[in-house]
Image (cartoon, rainbow, N blue to C red; front, side, top):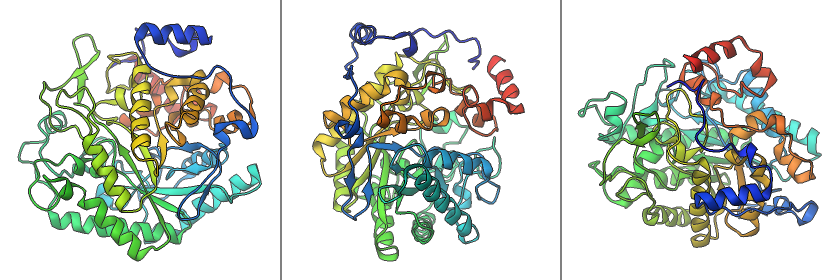
Length: 481
């Protein structure tokens, strides 16, 4: 769909200039979203709170840089100068937890695009250089890396694999999904991954974790979110065999990976980024606004109820109990998928080219994730819990985030899209520096529209580095078409 001439039907956050404006709007919309009018500074700020993990790693403050999918590596999975520039920005952001930096494939066939990073024996030196660059840049900016925790997100993209072409999917699926198979042109009898292939993949995760540890990374994330393969295991209610149907079987994947890592890479911490709830896939309605793509009852939303548009965290809690048994402490939360219900995953006023106009004020999406994460933190206080979906708050991000931290609704504030345009936001907040309005992400979704159309991802509207690229003109044409 075109976003070039899209006129938002909800007020822009930048228009909510005063606390009274924001409060009135939230009340009018019926959105339960707490915020603090005054920000605390120095040691009194909840953003300055450090944490030492049970494994002995220190996280120096309550800001986390979330992992984002990269589209600018080499075809053999090595980082390029564009990759290094992005990671350097993460290093000097001021955040003390770098959650994996970006998704790194453990198998060639599991890449989300032909330029996704991939950790293998040939690329070990490159990953070592990336880690050392992060360490040196952070130390130059802040004097020490003793309280910086950097990990690597390990992934297999499942039904969203595009290992050989930026436009041609080569899905690896666990079961035939009644909506997603149709949405992405897969026949009902499209072949499923075999148990043998899954066993090989588990070995690949363990080998990748060993390599990550060898090159310096202090933890690995076993990705269970956004409709990728780890997430699909959790909704494999129809799958036959030892990886489907019962919750015990659907969590076998994470248990076997964890056991392998504990045996082969002792001392390496393990984290999990999970979609703590999911909804039915959405599609464009007649007016371009998102509507459910299937009627209730919908039975494939892990952490969702049968309506398809509501949460039921009972199974999510059961999964978290499994993670507790595995002595996993690091938990990074998100929701849904950018491929089929992005408005609940990363609330935005402007949709990407393959998306739909938001069916609700995006602040509902922010509040929904904050509330769900608060439930998780209350029920599972031993997890070090990172929250997501904060970028849409824009100027009000620090005020809402401080309220969340003070209330104990999360331990760390995760930033994704926002750091593409405004990488030093954590440092500014921690220093009490007013936010730089010209750098604040306005959720134009160009960082998604570009890769959806075979280009690299970046903040084309606000980052001068990307703004001057020739492909920015191509992107403008696509948006206006």
